[in-house]
Image (cartoon, rainbow, N blue to C red):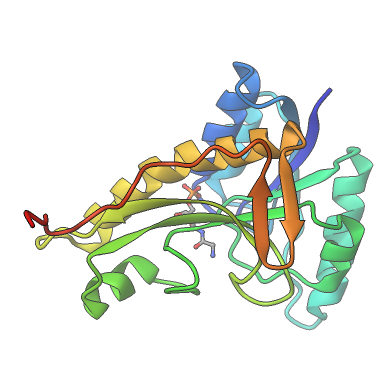
Length: 217
Ligand code: GAR
């Protein structure tokens, strides 16, 4: 078996769905062994159940530390033999406890072109800033927010009449492509972390320069 994936999701889980489907049809050499959530109402848990994948809920104890929370998360993931942790719309910061338990094996997706627009509500932030492009980023997770080495990015143009919802919808479509791709690169053993850079071996450069609006010169 390839990647032994534990997915952690707080919400709807459309990225989880794209990963479940890619595992099922063989585009990802791996299997989702458990889906964990901090939110018992997360629709991601329903998606897991429909796919026949076990679920676990670890709710945040407001009186406890984040490290205590991650001790429980790690225990649940280890119980299922997970070796790769995939954050799929997980809205809590992870701590060193989780990162040390799965070194260089915790991955996240973020709906902006990092390092621009880390944090929350980033589709609106990119529109408000006047950026002409946004997109999405799959990256290894480190102890800071949305800051670890970048594996793959997709660029999505921001249109003049975009709202956070329309832009977010187009970004999400790309998320569903690049997250499974990043995981398959990992499964193939092709990702090498060199400082802040993640190199793909053999290399596979993507598309060329993009302009928005168009350039006729
Ligand atoms: C996705 O856009 C994901 O990039 C974002 O939450 C959404 C979850 O959608 N994640 C973050 O903002 C992480 N800070 P989903 O539940 O349908 O996959």
